[in-house]
Image 1 (cartoon, protein in one colour):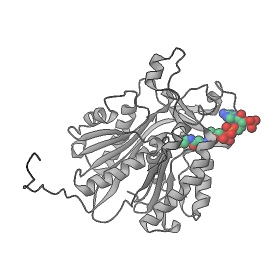
Image 2 (cartoon, helix red, strand yellow):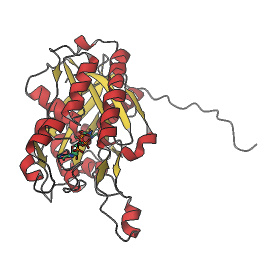
Image 3 (cartoon, protein in one colour):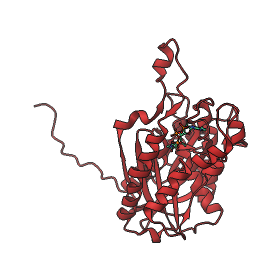
Length: 339
Ligand code: COA
């Protein structure tokens, strides 16, 4: 046996009893792309895209507008609404699948830009569920005492990673960013997160090659996203709706207690199916901003959340069910009190 048995006691980490979303902000790039423009590269139609996915337009970032630029714009709005500055932030979690550097993280650059250095900074790779993963982690960090204020950001430049000639994905995705500040609370305002993964379906939605294959293969293709649309659709409708129901149960509330349902904006038909399966009363505001913004992956929930609040469709202090799901396959859902 070697080493000494510990005699000194470690200082216990103590945080706030609870956490809450203090504010939300979002940013959409200027350029708006119509279905007609998408159909210049694929054999499709405005009517087909609208009826099968719900997308009417999506925003596209300028060539020099990065994931970090969009994240910064969203964070500045969220910080201002929270009455905080970058220097008040202890940790920055950026959910993204389109930051084009293997390393360093988008979060480290963003943290510096916001004047939040030396806050902890890390990117989360949980695709379209990344934002809801981040909310869960921020909540636990605040309650555990490792941070007091956390920025949770979803930022995506999917236009860099979607093949405009791929009929299965070209029409679906958009660019944008959304962010929330999560901070301490005296009362519970972020319910228990119900989350998980199913890696047996790793291939259902993935990059079509790895970076190493892209480097080594003779006829290598850019690692754009590829998707088994129907597989993902069925999974979302049949396996993910029960996750939403479990998040309500875990929070101890009924569908009628909700002011808003803010699901990942994957496809309007998936949203419709979830609303039906959850038996949401018509008074519950349902985020349906996929029509204007497309599927912005990790950014879709905070962008939709910001919109629902800005348009006065749900009140501050009301309860909202958030759910994200996507490549992995991974998912996360929680009920939150609206800022
Ligand atoms: N435009 C026009 N027709 C198209 C098309 C397009 N872009 N893509 C496929 N089609 C055609 C197919 O050729 C097929 O024609 P056929 O019946 O004559 O053979 C028909 O439409 C159905 O094809 P399918 O691939 O089964 O389409 P779908 O009804 O499943 O719709 C999606 C495709 C992508 C809209 C749908 O599968 C979907 O939304 N999946 C989930 C995607 C998602 O949520 N992803 C993100 C998760 S984070």
